[in-house]
Length: 415
Image (cartoon, rainbow, N blue to C red; front, top):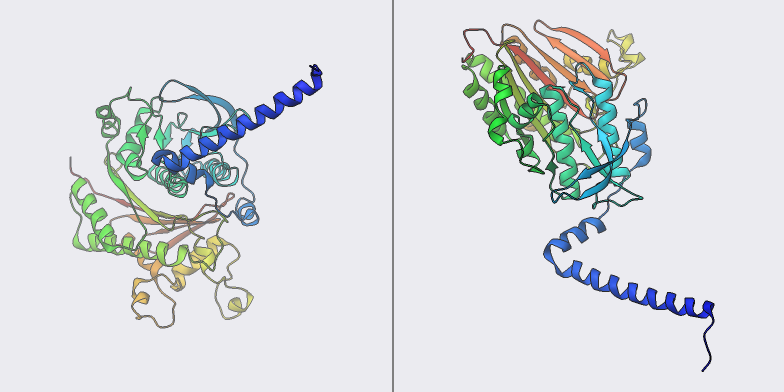
């Protein structure tokens, strides 16, 4: 019997190894297709979406890249996984730290939808993404709503359930996020139960905050506006009838704007998957005496849906709009936003609605109030009496956010 050479022996062993590995993979794939839980995972990994890289890079132009760190995370069973850690900024208040928050949000979108780092547990060569919120020390209702909407979008597109590792979160931040309903909106579970749920509420109450949980919907539902207004009345003594009606009308117009115009197919947006929703929330600061009401959508932005006034308009006495802030301010002054609810029923045949202007009517019914419109690179604040403050942002905002702030007198506060 002829003895095999070492080279021939290696070839035979390699051939047997490849056949065994192929058979193992076939059995594993068959299990994935027949097991319910594994079938969902298999379909999720096999699914794909279209990302327009040109549009995404245009939307992130001028935005600084947020740093990533190679790290590890501990799962539920105590197993250690390799991960790419995306650490949130310490100050998550949009009014004070807009540029860093936008860098963080766009990096989250890039890692999830472009680099596809949210599928599976990750490998040594391609670790999964871990969204780290431990560093956040200050947050407002605008930043919390933006964060909840981004996580909700990831959950809905990927079809996965989020897990919150909130053990090391700042107590007040955790209390605000829990009160605003972050866990409910994104249907999140908890990795560890070391901090009891009963301890979540205390820090917000100690800070004098009354929080209204988030709402989200795919329709311009007036019932949601009524639900949010009633929730505000439950947490403070109801204001006058005119103010209550103005709150309801402003919310309805904001919902119409989000569903009717923000997600139109004729505008490409940022090139990423869309969920076509709006998110809303409110917070009452009893110490400062302010009511904060916010509506947010991830659409194409107000300046995109309006035609910018140029030199010809300047010849007839109209203000030339050179940037996004001028476009938003022009929509308030001229009443040319096509978002009014009356237009949906044919009361404005010319198609030039007054939706943005109607959102500002709330400011005239309180002792002091203002409305902030943030969209793309424009930020406009409308104060009571019609005073406008325009700001051009350095970093492009991802969608449109409308924030109402109104003072509630000491007699109206419910102690």
